[in-house]
Amino acid sequence: MRLVKSTWDEYADCAERCRAKFPKNLSTRKDDVLKLLSKADVSDEFAEKIYQQMEKRGLSRSVILGIKMAVGSIIEVVGAIIKDGDRYLVGQRAANKSQGGLWEFIGGKIEPGETPERALARECREEIDLEIENEHIIDSVIHKYPEKTIRLTLISCSLTAGSTPKTLEHQQIRWVSREEMDDMDFAPADGELINRLLIRS
Image (cartoon, rainbow, N blue to C red; front, side):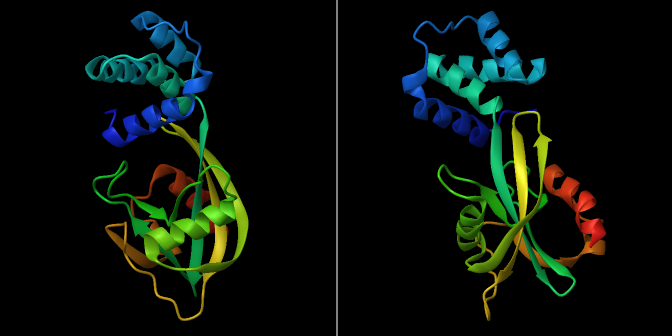
């Protein structure tokens, strides 16, 4: 597993936001760092790769604990179930992002202070330039990746009348049937919900 820049930046950003809470006596020894990361429920291999990145960038107490906090917590994410007849709107992740090229439901990370519904409305504006309505939560799944754990909450919604989605952040967006999804490579969390939920529709 390669620790990509975007992932590292998330860890460092977490550290900066929580700097005031860091213990001043936090150890920077490699063995202590790996032990700290092991408590955050990440694999030994991934913890070692994190430490290698930390050595290259210059070890700091804030980043160590920021990494621990980031990998040890669940990242809340939302996805939109937008239907047109028997077709669903999905997007292909940009090649330069984590899981680039994989398909997903439109959505993204819930920001502090947002409800899932508000987060999805914002993400739809940012990703496909659309307003949504009639939102209601239908299911969620917790999925553990090597570098993070997310809770993906799916929200059923509809587009406002007369609106057409635009491709702003994805490689492409498509309307696809449930059967077509079986031949597409989805991000693991999205794929898990497809198998668990949409197969019943």
